[in-house]
Length: 474
Image (cartoon, rainbow, N blue to C red):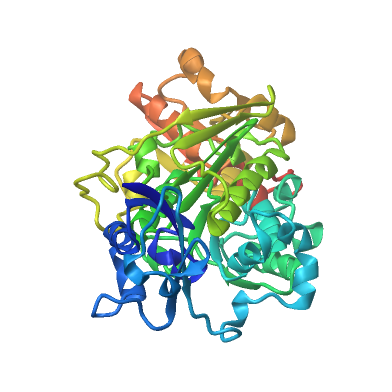
């Protein structure tokens, strides 16, 4: 038996998991096609008619010679034979796949690459990518994918531009502060490349809208910064059979890989369950080196371009770790988990779930051992000299940016060591940046018998907005 190669044209690659070539063992054209259709059953209807013959609009070439000039489907093959399927293409009926003269010049440095060529660039033009998040990762992703000529980009983000974003979110300027990120991003990307289509979704990605938003796109790039959305994106991509290009950043470290591609693992294979709420701080709480998102986003964009043009090897099955301080890249092998409840042999997840609840974050009113206090209420207590202790549990570098003058500073990690300094009957008001860390500290106090414990709702940022706008937001 001979090993032969079948070359798949771009219009039919959606039936071969986007593979450009398929190797099979066969000694005749008919046997090679039979082996191909075993691997990709849906392709058979596109190539063969009901009588088992090639459709009239499909030609097959063996070593660059039409098999009709040889022995047809009975043509004998040799080791290394090449079979190219050539269907009729209605030239010009799909303008999105054709490059204009201006585009040929614009993308010439791509087209000069033998691995890309005009066919690869037209594949990019006909492709669609949904970017989840228009923040640190989403901004450079949008820039590079728009510049590369990806024909349709969708951007999902319900946030507005904040001054603290400008340190790393390179799509925005000071004039954009307070404006919806997706609108600002789309305007900038249209200026960069007027030949592409941009769709904006100024909404929060949820279990209610994720399937509808993701379904029309060829692949998804995850630029999120929280665990509920990350699991939501992963699950929706697996259920819809969409590749998911993952990236994450924190302080000086980054990760990147490709999930749900070429029978590879999904995010749940790597992380079956999320960490407890508050254990892993976000970039908003822990900080991030401004250039780090560009490094990871460039890797994500590279994987997307390779995937759409079928160039090179994918990161699927490999987790790329980047340490900016040491300037080190490391690859770790990640395998598909046969027991994965989503993509394993016997999946138990068949629909999207409540990801806030799954990640231990609840929006329902639950009985708690501490109480919330609003910035306005706290201001009134301070003005009337109510006896209370205001505790700032943020890190020192955060306190150096802004602080409530009446507060005393005890970082969250040192609370246990200082707890004995307070009396059980004292009124304790705890705050952090947004209210998450301080809620955990409140639980620590009440667990030790403290009865009058309050958490500042929204943290110091809410205090800044409502009470003292001279403080610096970060």
